[in-house]
Image 1 (cartoon, rainbow over the protein chains, first blue to last red):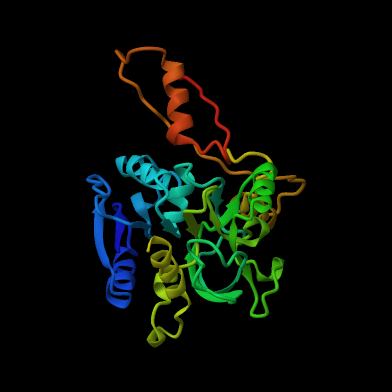
Image 2 (cartoon, rainbow over the protein chains, first blue to last red):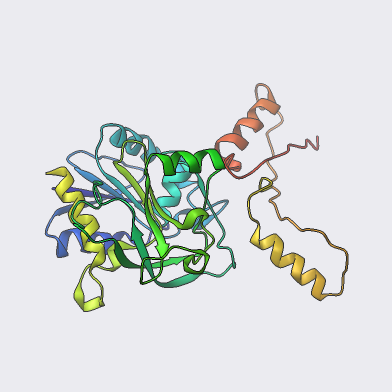
Length: 229
Length: 73
């Protein structure tokens, strides 16, 4: 299958995503420059991490109004899988594809470390290969990863089972102590209503091969491949 | 400005710093953004409506921010 990786000025995780799906998983992959968004032939999209538009104004704000988003929204509407990672998640939020917003980390620091994530749903298009796995570890690297949504929206997300990953400890406990950035309800990743668009702050593309010490990220892309086939 | 109820860690940090300077009795500090938009003299249409739209669509994030518009000329 073919993954399209959307690139904005300032995106910097695009190559890691390309390596992940093309070299590690042997799929077709193409970079899609935001100003020339031809999604033809793509079965899935990745909106990668980085600092699009320098994070100026708000992280992801200017990317969200790029012409590429019209195409991405239509692609999502057609039911195809789309994953937004880190800045990609911020872009999906700013564009309204996903509800809520990101604010500055609670303790203001840019946090770069491995985190444990409790997997809340093993049947989604992004977790169908997890089998019984309820805990994974992925690295985060962000200064604005604190997820916010109002009480009504949070209730909706929880009620509809759309929180996919939560920051946890190695035993799978979820609490303030296991929350690196102040995200409400320890939310690390959420799905849209239809379950085909995922936004997550941690970086699965950085955990694809045993040589980097962690292969948990593979499962997410493998699930997307499964979902498409 | 961030809406009430949205955590403002930068404001909190500034608050602590003010207190460390010796200022007492500060109940809160919140930090927002100031944006200047200069329109051409001959800009068409309802200017207020135009700028409001700019705020709604890009300059602010209505999920977490409120905005106020002030005209200088």
